[in-house]
Image (tube, rainbow, N blue to C red; front, side):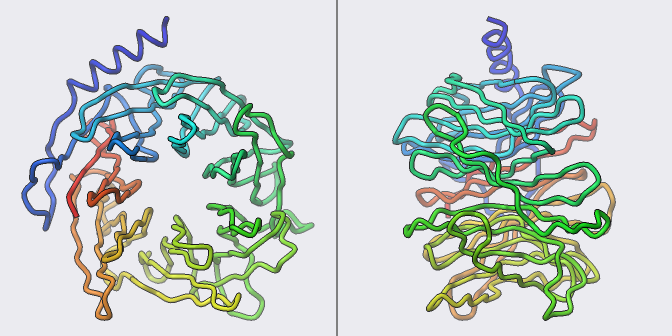
Length: 402
């Protein structure tokens, strides 16, 4: 009953606080079927993920502390195609539950919400299964001997693959993969932890798995970040690593690549089993956003840069990427050197030989943050977190025609 009352209250408050107020550089005037909206409930809402169903329903995942001073909860919103709220659901299991990923499975009529739970200083990952109305079917928490920080959930037949970062006290982080039964939520296998771990804790490398993709041949393609340098190259910082692994154990050698400085992979989009889009930031005198195309030709990887920020007066990195037959779309966070002023940037790269580039900047005077971008049926959905002058934050969703 309490959850229903809080959900109803949330619905009322969210409906009141929908408004438009930000400026956008280079965007044309909004047309019918497009919108710019903000959603909040009075304190801090942090946007996490977005998905669209076959009827143009919009699902937004966020973390909120608007309903509890001492803890955070997971918030799931559903909007219609015009951005009007259809429902709002809150989920909380223990203290400080933070959302990390949203997995919509319309075929089976299910939603999977992935999060992290912090209790007594120990972090574990949590998976929530709901129906398409957001009603909870089950909630499961998983923990190992160390801290697990989940990044992404991937549907693999009847299983859910959860991946992320694993850390024990006094050592660097490694990566983990956890296979869960999608029907019951029970572990199919125990948590598998891998990465380059030194006998000297001070030399441990910080490894983090960003995502994993099931392949048609039964193998898996994994992507992540590692602090382990490639011995054949002069790398001063982190590298991107990737590699096909039949059992997550790394029996096939991982491949690493990067620049002369640190490279950080934030997001990967799969085009096919043999082609991927990798995006993030690399570190020189500042941080530069990048998008790369990784192809496997005769099992040999070929990495090609599609976009690389060249303006050294700003710091930028890519947090999300999507594409159509004509364009690549990058969602970047940029900073012009002001400690408390972060802007959001949409980069449109034409998939033509000359690769024409168009940029659109938007945001206010605070620490606004781009979170996720989604292309669906000739529309572009941009999910952000907007920082208000009073220190609170709100969910921001922009819908534009392509």
